[in-house]
Image 1 (cartoon, rainbow, N blue to C red):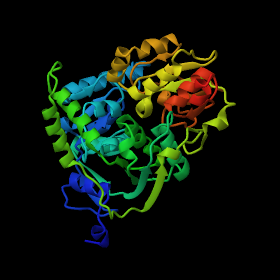
Image 2: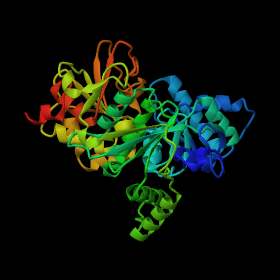
Image 3: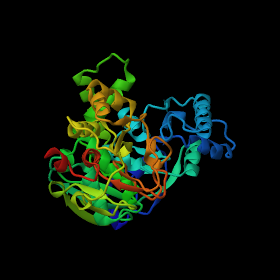
Image 4: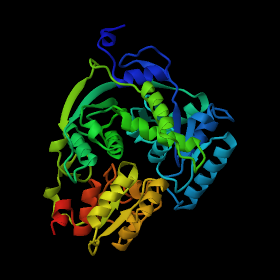
Length: 447
């Protein structure tokens, strides 16, 4: 092999070698990879039309497929309803067991909760934020509709082994500062094309200090760096979570797995995990100290246009939005609940909360948080993508300003070209809803 092999391998090299049944791969090599899971969402109806042109009447491997209705739920138009009906028929006809209905939640969140993807595996999704699955040490990459149709037909897809960059994280986040702030700092420094078709591989002691939800946020946001995949080194916290989730899915609803059973499954997952070599051939290396990260906001209309939150205190907010595959988890709702405790939403500002999944919503309901947030004036949306891409449940009026916990602030992203979208952490979103302008948690909590 070349000198690259003697230098060691990146995570991406190892993951694609496994998926292609090869001993090793080189950067730039084209491989025929077999994904462990291929998923799509509301776009499955359009993918089906492409797949039909292959002349097939059965998908290659329904056991390696998952479909989620999440991008426009409940259906906001007749056309969306027709697409959903077509998908439901397709799922039954093809015997696809991993199907998640409207209201179950966002694909990335639900597939993580159900442990349908595991460390070291390859997951290809018809959604650009599939790098999300790097939170558990899986190779997740977004593909187009034609590519997904080819996977349905053949069970494989060719992929180019990407170059890789290492991002070392040290330190620990300060109170009210989150992984979203860290992600915005990274993107602000490296640019939206800083990881273009790269494997963005996180290392460093700071990763273990992040909650699992925070790791999901960090991996997910790297799609805005242009990456092919992202990767965080999995540890015992990841293995234990996935083991519990996997056993919960396999067992009867009222069966609680024992500690030894969880430990055994977690150990098996740990054995299958992949880690980059110490001398991996990284194209670039960067370092970020999480302890020095401050609350940041991405200004319209690009994600890398980031500034400190304090520079935007003059910006009035019409809508504050908490949700999406980036920041719609229980941890995020808890942060909003803490900031709104005993407070109400500012007059002239509305707060929209869309949980990432049914499981997240039910957990927040059990804790009493949803009732408190509704009492404070928040509006609750159906678990799913909601207004993130401007389908419904929060479309903006021309001239309005939204501060959002989502991942994109492109012009027209939330349905209206003449609106402005600022991206921020759940804490900043909540504080801004209370203040009626872009604000930090300190601005609100000190009063």
